[in-house]
Image (cartoon, rainbow, N blue to C red; front, side, top):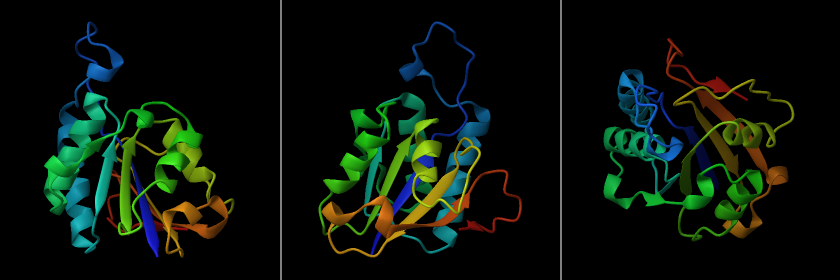
Length: 171
């Protein structure tokens, strides 16, 4: 079994218009939501073995805060340029090239790519929008990442910061 987690970056700040898109930091809400979602993930006893993040500051900071809250060493986060608005083909390529010893992979990146990618997995599940700091879990009954495909992967759940109950939305 292989698991892919898709995490959208937390809410960013637009306070400094002189910053490039990649340099935008998290806003106050984002600084609260990322560790809260990591703690919620940890409370479900889920584990991460590899985390890849977009190079954008807001995504990398989200990854760090989330990982610190769930016990994954933030220094082990890998910055992956292909997660910065490269499209779903690049996302799938990243999944296919993972080391087979890794069973759970988290990708931290951006909309619209994350919503498009999540919706390409299971046509019975439709997400209008993965909100900031939204988390999608996908499961695939495979032994090797190179065998991962949309056809052998199922949508397990979706969670997001404003989900008051904390109960995940199952596919």
